[in-house]
Image (cartoon, rainbow, N blue to C red; front, side):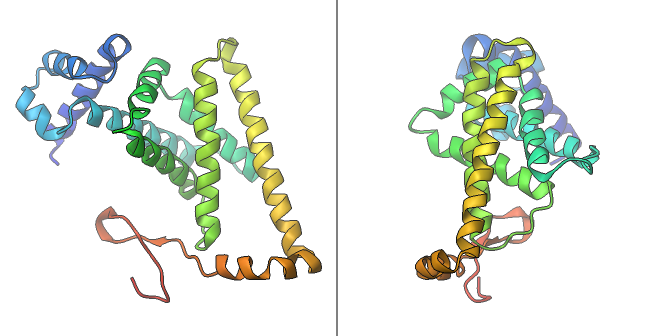
Length: 231
């Protein structure tokens, strides 16, 4: 994509945000963004085929990219890993426009867009883990992302209704959710360490050990499950 197209995409997204608070991620917002950004609707549709839906997706991914950029330059050396994850989720929300997220939550709650909404949340969790250096390639790859997706989604919903100064209640809620996750991880470790429990769950643990993380394909295409070294 050329720089000119990138600039037009950015202008359209910025212009759309001025209307989303009133009209949501709708065709009305899309058409208004085209007028305000001085981009022909046919050209805008070529970049965003589904109109406002694709603008909402682009907005979410732009927020993910901004969060990852902040994580990469932040000094996290003094933080425990759980604190790094907490910081990532917090920064992701601090970088977002609350009303745009509220309207996006409504959009992706619709049956026809629910799968895409879940995919975006998973993508956020995956980006957090990858940016923080996660190297898991077994079932933990999935469990980490599934758990963080749940934490992120719950925190977003709490944040949308939070009226405390500086969203203090949201950050306390986030801390509690991360603490719940750590209890699960501690329980998993105890199962592995216990001679009795490890034998009791030998079958499921053996099966879980056969699961591998998706193998990324060139050009950022979706990964595939590793089955004995064959794609």
